[in-house]
Image 1: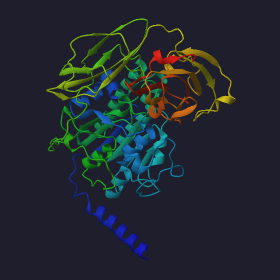
Image 2: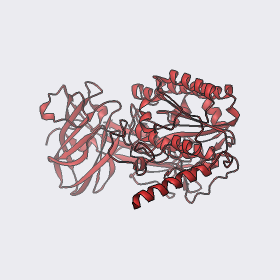
Image 3: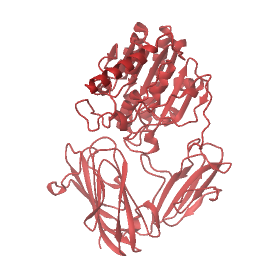
Image 4: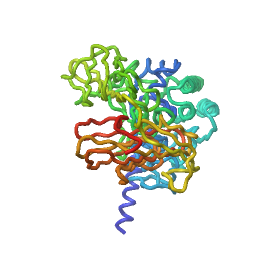
Length: 551
């Protein structure tokens, strides 16, 4: 009986709260909101592609190119966060195939259909008569949306059909709230690689499609009374995403339209779950306490920038180290056999001063100021950061320089395997190798893969330890990987995932020890790299000069 009474009180309270927010009570910044989500759009894409529409929106709006996705940097988790105002820890969407009948972590609050309350529900509950629509190029987003909150739902098959659906809907229905998802940029990243000419071409096309949507608002007569929000779910590296690399995690966030400040850089932390809170704020509605997203109020006129207690870590891009990595996840530096190398650092922002270290430590205000190229003759970890008036104003960039005088006897033997449908490391004892070879380093770069998808590798040999003590080993991989030292598992990074790093430690005596690394790629982007640290050894890519084919 007590439970029934409590339920009726709770329902009455919710009804009273939303009833209190009548049309006359609102103080909106705009009468309409259109959210445009471009899947896989990175800040790099905007900076390097032809994007006159997005450039205009930034010059005449408020923006950040350092907003962040949630982890994992996969589509399901992030589109869920963008429409639900909270992270996966709250809404429970941690995979692309999440459904109300297929989940592991239940939402911590629900409105209907076992779903965490979306922005569509928040608008519907406070404005029951509102026209609300969603056009979803990536159709699985529909699984995250309540059944009773949309007037219009379209599930087109490509970016062109998506734009046509959006344009027609806006012009014919004059919606108060619209969400448009466009998917082809992510597809270009997976097929051709992030940063490729084809990727930038896809960003340029997305820009033109955004222009068509803005024009539809003009044709509908609501352009001057609309706030446009543009963002993404993740960036990418190489052919994939899903890890925690800044290039995967950083996304654009653009606010443009009525009552929005012009040419205003948002120098505050912004997360993808702040997008729906900002949209609801623009409409003058109440933001649910259950959401953890905060409205980016300082994007709008009459709202000052907040006074931060601590400095931002990304005011400017990190200095560039050369030689640079050869695309994808490759860090600056490289392996140099029988030669030394000249290392240089450049400042892409043109302001501040570059400070650096050559022992793997974090650059600080007492670190040397870079004043010219350095000759690298031994294994060296270079870290660099931009400083302004003695304060760090960029992230840290790290380069790994590995030197090997003579390759004879060095490296590991590897075998390549194929198995369809892998989502975990296979039982290699049941498979026959498709290819064999040797590699000087533990890296997917150096493997002669027989195919890109559903492929696996085993690397075996010996690692030479100089000093007795406890060593920590790291595997960064997409997808899964394991490492064994002397037949004992030291790192478990198995599973179907983007590039993530896991580690393990063990005590080792001087001498050579057996090492075995297993790795697989299920589909899409792939990567494998191994790091270590220990007595007298800063964290670094496992050097080629301590890997041997035989004991």
